Image (tube, rainbow, N blue to C red; front, side):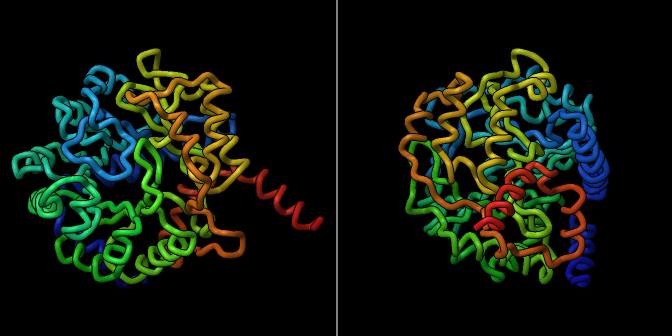
Length: 413
């Protein structure tokens, strides 16, 4: 376990720009830990403001991926630079320093680099398909020093074309990936695991290829069948979801690459970052949403500061509590009926441009998510991951009531 960690540290230190790494360690590492500690302190006072905010800055994209919930085929809607700066400045004043930037394809936003440049005291994770990252843009990102590209790769050449609705998708994405690595950016690869790519990409061989290429970290999501074109056939089975968790835990102890997951604590218990309040989402229209796939809102960033909006929202509070009371997994997948009930109860607006979000919920069938039955949890084996999650990525007590009731029921059965 120790040797792969040392190899990963050495590999990262030798291959990434030192100024870039310094900004990462300060703005994401030190200040990120501080923001989580502030979050925990606020929780004790009954105040919920997430330490990590994800912003979908526009809806436009150059690809047409299967199962995409973003209105990429509609006229462009984007958050302008003034509103982006307003969001980040307000969050910074309450201790935040890390932001996830999504789209569509965020590199299609004309003011993106001006936005990054305005906040040298923050660190941004750029969710991108990588195809618009030229050598020139990679050099700009290196000069900025506060952005880590997270490049989505969805399969081998044939699968990538099918999954992403384009031609020569993999090669064009790999060119963008190599531009980042050649310019010494701290770079990750994300994969939305589904039936057509799990056998190819959930493998040690694939991770070793990423390591050989110079990639620093990987992030395995699981495909969420939501949106206007729900591809049920792509969803993972409960057995596959367990396999994903087991693979990630084992590879963390074996390979010199960082592996991110957002669904489990250090003991292997499932969690939802929306339900525990550690992250929320802002849509391209400025709507303040529980998470990217819950496209309903009662507030908008144009109405006031993000801190006041999130801490005073009855809709967001009800969503967190309802999710935590009913599942440790994904409320959208497991209980779409509850999502509909909450939206209607609060008179939440459909934040999509297509205006069919309620109909889409009605067409969904309940299915498994990341939750594993009690007693089947897979704890972290790597001591560093387990220690870090214990303090900075756990359920923060939001599931206590649900677990207490489950224990009482078990005792009486």
